[in-house]
Amino acid sequence: MDRTAFEAELNRYTQEELRLIYATQQDVYSEEELAMIAERLEPVPEPEKTSPLTVICCILSCIVPFFGIILGLMLRGETDERRRKLGSDLLVCGCLPTIGLGVLIGGVMLFSKDEQKKTVGKKCLAASFISLMLGLFLLSGGFSV
Image (cartoon, rainbow, N blue to C red):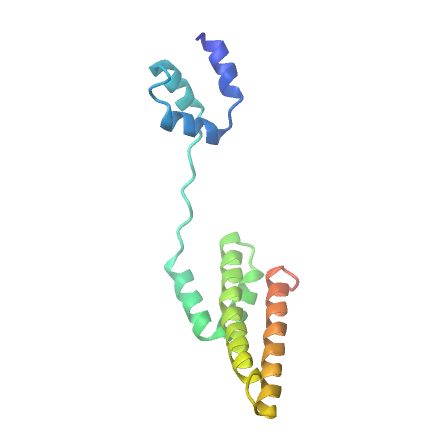
């Protein structure tokens, strides 16, 4: 195949398709053609690694939910994108245990025979629903510090 025709054919492919061709079809193409494909491949960016600080803060947020919510709101106002993402993660880690605990307690108490426990169960479920809505609102960026 002539070089210009092969280059025209390569122009039709996306980076993902070129990577697949280069990885799986080495026996189909000549060394020169493989070199042309390799020239067109852009380097794959390394995925970001989660810092130990992020892991520690998220674990602490699950144990002490208000820590995650407060710190998450504080970091959401930052200009650095990594710190803003950490703030979002902390908000999720802070809101989920609160919601899960409320649903668990509310569900158990709702099926009790005691009317007073049923009332408490309904209130727990309502508080969990409100906490879920508040968490979604905060994560969507509806409130900035």
